[in-house]
Length: 248
Ligand code: PEP
Image (cartoon, rainbow, N blue to C red; front, side, top):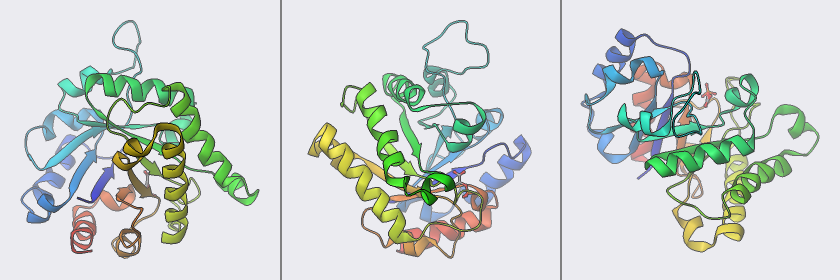
């Protein structure tokens, strides 16, 4: 099944989140895709249990199991709150919270330990791209994490290729660029973790996607789905993306 994930970032009150869910919850297309929402933590309780066909995820996770870590929320606490997924090292976390690949590896391990699915975000920024260092950056982001995890996937892994220059810019990567990145990521996982692990990997593209661009990305055999920011906030545009995806 294709994957459609919505990253709401720091948007929506509880009432707004409930209204979004009311608009989306009874759509038959939800049964033909793995749909996951990453809402603000404050809205999780209101969304939980209101739609069985919608997965819930957190936008970040603490790497520790429990303890004196003010401001952190553990993977087990997220599971307790109804989450089955968490984003790891989104570029905005890398930028504003100084998250690096080592921290990402610890978070992925913590999520597996609690039985959650990590969605590990990778991607080069504009300067790296212009300097011709995009592929190297991507490879380092994946390899550093795999090395820290002893080249073993201890659970399901989803990797989202999100070029930083495309996020929120209105100018997505082309499907061919996203496919090239997906090929590099899969090849890296294959060489480190073996064929079975690489086959289990799911690869998403994220960065300024919209209803108009879904078909092109989903036509790429190496792309399993999309991680959507801005266009996921309005239920109508999100549903339009879902409809195109399940028809593709
Ligand atoms: C994101 O931040 O994960 C994202 C994909 O954002 P947007 O779709 O708004 O570019």
